[in-house]
Image (cartoon, helix red, strand yellow):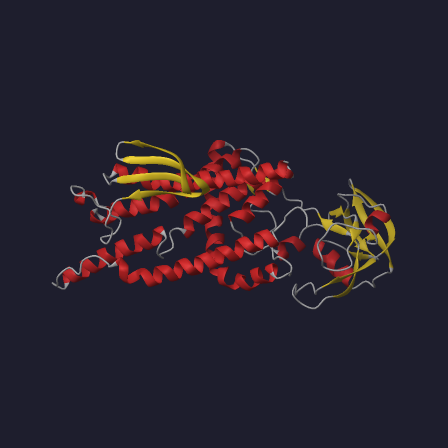
Length: 416
């Protein structure tokens, strides 16, 4: 029940975000005197609507977004009534049109920033010092968390009958113990533990030195056998290696809370890091398509593949079901930030495409004026329709691919 509640709650959060996106367009357009005739939440058949002034507001039956209608967005639009010619959007200065078209993304950024600031003061934001790379993880002290079993290969799943029990548990080791040696070889980090296990014969008896509550101890256990790729090549061929059946307990806290003033700087740093990560994710989108197809056709789902609104809602449901509200909020923040950035890409029919055309027209007029040539006028949007349709087709296909992957083989953080 909590999972379903989380899915619905996250989907509702997305709907509210998109509705506020459209409200951003509407409010700024009205503030500049542009004519907005319609503002609706959802698509499809109208459930109800009412009119205030010159704008009709309403709710439609399919809760998958929203829209607002600004009269005369392009010179080719034929929705300008007699007497409203001066209020057509395309006639306004380029800076005003830029504000109106970017207001949707600015709304998403504002939601992300406010949510991050509130998170910073409650459960906290990700700690910049928390180890995030493989190199940083291996440099951590070998403080262990016991696993129930050792899986026979690289498959990630729950333990089942027939799986080898954890050798660490059999040796009497406990969560929070720090491994200090194996067969006399000193262990100074988690990387040392991995390296030493790889050089120890699978199935052999190992003497384990450890430290618990500041006190040294020793134990013996028979190491299990599993299959792993080389330490320095995660995509390399797997082979039989020794396993102790432990994970790493990172000594650095993953989340850090701040006071209201400190939270401003922490939020700024967090959003800056998110901007870099978002730019990198957008650059990697094309290369992730084969991985999505693999997930759909029965292969393992790469956790680094893109997700749709459906996938994000599923993760939101998992977060609520596991009482991980911090993950729920982080998903909300990252999704809003990504939508904000994506909508500013200079491609039609995205908002960024309209902004790019507006500034192209302004730059072209400036150049022609300096050359003492007649102003070439506005861009003909009809000539750009083939490019627009291509973007819509590619974007639609990619969206369909991600939704299918999220339904057939969804990403799961807590269990598989």
